[in-house]
Length: 476
Image (cartoon, rainbow, N blue to C red; front, side, top):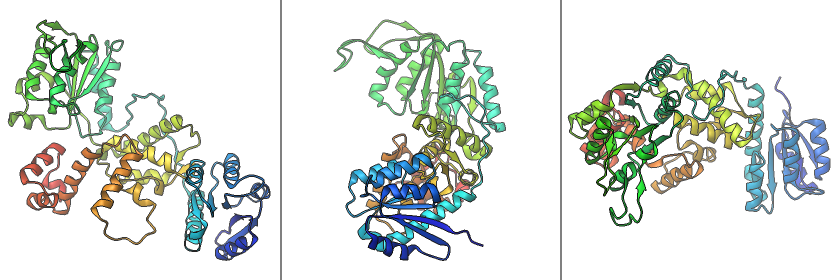
């Protein structure tokens, strides 16, 4: 027998209550009504309804205050607010307090029943959701590398072995796989851990500024150099320098890097003084440097100097068994930051995470958990709360609309909204990688058709495929 669900309707107008009750009453739905907020609170505490639908303008206290009082007593309470005079502030405040939705009264003839049905469906799903059994026992740490897969166990062993030496290390792996975390772990377990760990992204700094950033400059070395500046190498003296995206370092700077690795010597831009540096170098790249060397885009001698110890990080899709423990770790991390102690994942949500390919790797998983924690309407994160892929979050709110083609302007606006919602999203690199991957997939690896679809030359497409590790075989 199907369980009877209870709705509590609150509005000062009895005519509205009568109309709304008729709309929502079904053989499996019981509707209670109230015209005041204090009476509604008493009914809620006595009856524990599945859903509260309340007007914002109530007496003796407002619908927003009723929402807050109910959520204070029941953190999983499902509440929909309605108003004839909804303000931007009320909408924002209601969602901040955890409302399921906020509706204007003029739209209720069309929206009330679908929204209430969706809310009741969520309540029913939460009741039947399987609790996710925590597996994480490690102490919280901002630089933790989490993983129990055999591939990550081998990475941990390598970290332990290389941390006792000063040998240069090359970390390779796809974007977002955690290369900087590995570099930090090597530094933290080394005898240099009392000194600075300095990270620099060689791809993020313009070529004309990178040399000054790395080595510093003397006063008057170039226009704008009004004082002497200490570079990153001097800042990391006695410690560790992490050079991310080393494959993007210009050839002109690679010779200076080679000198540092060979002799520990460098000079500031515009200076003649030879400085000595005691710095351990750890480099990382998502490029195929052996190919770059063969194409004369990367110095062979520098490659062999950097590639003394190689640590290859596997993509997340190749260590599915780590997704559960990573998701739990990130959820604990965001719950601690956002003061959300009751937040937890459902087993169904974890299964959804495990069935996704994670093109953005661990970084994408962390961003996904952060968005789910912020946007979830209950303490238990369900599959619908997990925004898998950049477009999911923006499109989920309009999922009740008929599917159809969208304009390029709408697509661009959607992507920008996703980036605004999560400042950690690297939008342009993501778009370039994902568009290239999907173009190759829909054309089944045909580079001519894929390049035409993207509006680029075949040579440019080939370069991007090499950069992102996209092969014809993997696209079919």
